[in-house]
Length: 236
Image (cartoon, rainbow, N blue to C red; front, top):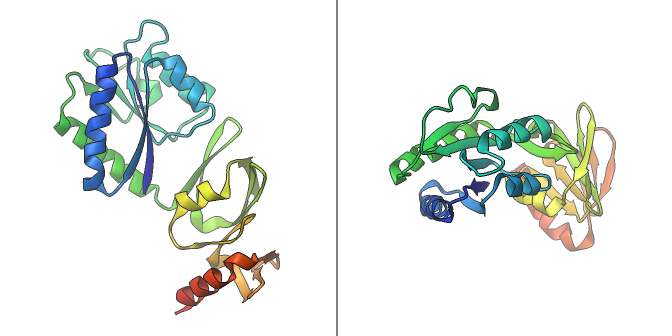
């Protein structure tokens, strides 16, 4: 499991402390953490226009755009309701100001390993509840869909189309990234342009698959032996 984390504090020593503590928890949780550090709210907001984070550690006291403003920007302007936010502060009087931002937790300085572990344990539990969901960004919207409803993904350049039992969604991304994110054995990477949910395959041939709705998709020559082996394993 991968988890993308942002740490935003204008004190580099705080960023380094949190980075080091989270990295130390990686082996214990079995989660691979990817951590980006920022020293201003503006920098974080710019990065979030093209990067999806699972968890943000966000300081409140900044000389310019403060953490409350950053949180409102994330929720209201970027329309991101899925990312979990943990606020960092040396004070405790911000409870009402943070109400509409719905933070996951509040971390009081000085930061300790035990407190950070509690927060990460809570995050891991919340993340496990979302394990059956695929999260993606379409324009300014951050969406979640049950993996069981996804029939397949197709790609053309940097554009991905997600086909579900109800409707289709088009967004920017790559099948390599999606395949790496799903990693649950249910999807078959049959072609550089197609990632298919095994549950929706009606008929398999060496060169192509036919889906339950009649859609026929090619299996590329370099992947045929691997796909055949995967399907045989699934059917055992």
